[in-house]
Length: 274
Image: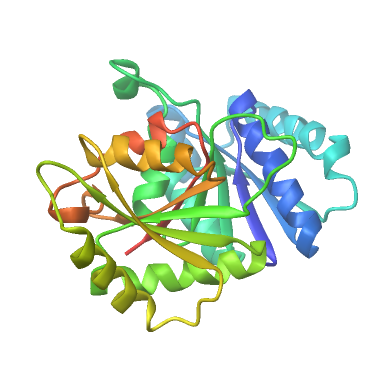
């Protein structure tokens, strides 16, 4: 893992993500790319595209670069190679382009976690990246002074389409030296007998050279609660999920999991696009 991208809006949540990225980078001598995106009002954006010089734009750029310089000087980043980038673009477009340009291996993003009406008003950028990124995204919800990835939960229906993203998860778990907990969540609307769930999981993992793993079935009232409650029951460090770019979270277990898991789980969520 050589390149880690951390988008920042200079908030506390972005800082929490950067701290985790720093811990990961120090373990593998990785470079961190700190990216700040901002969008211009439409009339300013038209002028920029037309080649006109706009004092306000230059002021925004100057201030953003000053703030990035300040962030990059944080003591916890000492010894890490840092690249600072400021772009004028929509967040999802800019993050996607920088990821390609710098051959990024992992995106680490902060999220405040919201509920109710707030979900409609704030925090959508992280969800958009999770939904669209071809690169694994690690969503950090709080300050984690000692980031650990010893136990990673992978909740799935273990269909063929999840094998490709699962391979990416396996590669990351080898880097983190993690134990993978594969779990089938059974609900009243998506019940599966234990022997069938275990058979599906065993057939799924037979194609992978796994040595440190365990399979589980867990019953709950719905999928999202089941994943969160199971993860808490084994004291998991990370929840691993697959996503569908076209509709948000994949339709696991004959049902659908909303992007609310990114909002509602306190634990870090690691996502892989199908």
